[in-house]
Amino acid sequence: MFLDLTENTSQNVYSYLVGGISPRPIAWISTLNSEGIANIAPYSFFTVASCKPPVLSVTQVNPSDKTNKDTLSNLMATKECVVNIVSQELVEKMNQSCANYPSDISEFDAANIAQAPSLLVNAPSVAGSKVRFECKLREVISISNEPSGGKMMLLDVVGICINDSVMSNGYIDPKLLNAVGKMGGDYFSTTKDKFVLKRPQL
Image (cartoon, rainbow, N blue to C red; front, side, top):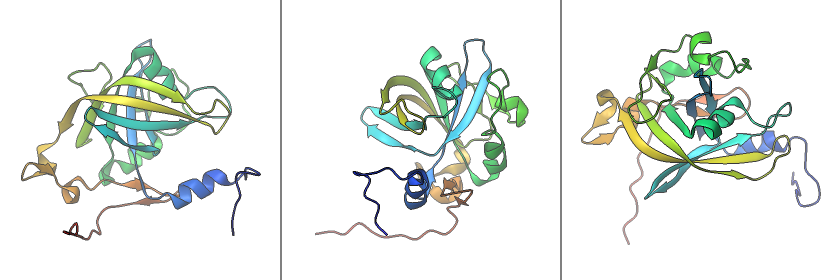
């Protein structure tokens, strides 16, 4: 099967993209709205954009019923957020937080997610998250305003909170972090099975 997207856009292109680009790390983003209500939602179009300066990239796939999701609306209003990394023990609460709650309902309360104060931003952190990136909004790049189009959020990392339990020899140990990834459909992946490949020396 070959899909020529230069001639037509398949209605299933989203499923092909997320099914083929898999697994993807999950940015569990917490924000505050203008009334001070805490919001949190997971995003799997997420990666590191730069290390110097430290910048994260998270993309919103535009919903069909409104221009922006609450996370992006809050981020544009306050310019702050926290990207919480999801370890396996947090998967159920993370999944509950992606329900379509009204904007005046805090997913922290609805999903019984314990909060922790952040140090450099006003948005709360997830207490159980073992790695948390406190961020300021650098830029929003609108790729398309259409439903299913993308808006990329570039986030300057101003601080990182790391639980000592995932540190080994001065580095974050992936075995101890035990982060999960998003796959196509309702599938998630763990990082329990790992292997090592040394970078070749020429």
